[in-house]
Length: 224
Ligand SMILES: CC(C)(COP(=O)(O)OP(=O)(O)OC[C@H]1O[C@@H](n2cnc3c(N)ncnc32)[C@H](O)[C@@H]1OP(=O)(O)O)[C@@H](O)C(=O)NCCC(=O)NCCS
Image (cartoon, rainbow, N blue to C red; front, side, top):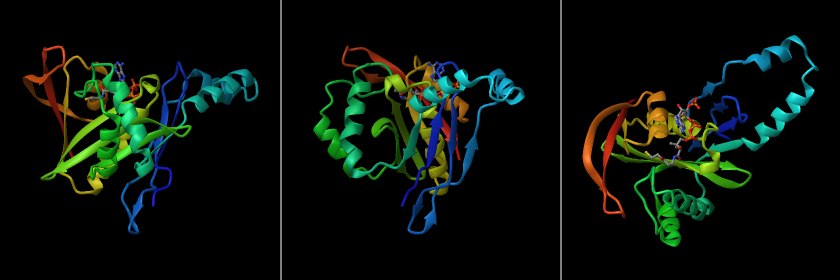
């Protein structure tokens, strides 16, 4: 049984606020520890503290933005499989951050996601899947893959997903998380570094692309 695992929220010009709370319970066992992360207060917060009520317009504006950026992180349900496949297809169209390229057969991928036994989380906003992460465990090492819908990036979704996956991997007793990232993927590399991943090696021409090029991959890892 899983209740809300994470909440995210933030404004257009401000650092996102997100919290990961205890909520995932399997067979009576709590499988996620609590993690609470909040942004530091900024000038607007301090002004509101000093002059309560004076910044109503700003607060209204911020409330609207926070609603736009609200999302939950939870393990996927069977009925999420198709939305996950559609999200994969959309990000694959970018031909930039992930190894999968078009054409993505959504039916095939939906079945794969539904049958997958990888430890996974989805980020859901207004009923739509806007991000996902999967950790495939082999011999104590979890191979990690993740993506966030383009218009939801830089709102803390990736951080919330990664935070939840790391906590879950620790609880499951994994030794390490590992992933491949393209060297040009500055956003992903920055996100992984932020969570303590280090670069271990560079694999030359590891991924053949539809264009005929072969891209290098950086292997990053996090000891748990
Ligand atoms: C990589 C990805 C998952 C990040 O997700 P996100 O929801 O945008 O991440 P967050 O908003 O939580 O950002 C977390 C941190 O990542 C870094 N980051 C994110 N986007 C960045 C960008 N465009 N440039 C530089 N750093 C960036 C920052 O350190 C950021 O922290 P900050 O906001 O406090 O500065 C997302 O960009 C994505 O899905 N890209 C396409 C698919 C992909 O590349 N997947 C990874 C394959 S290895």
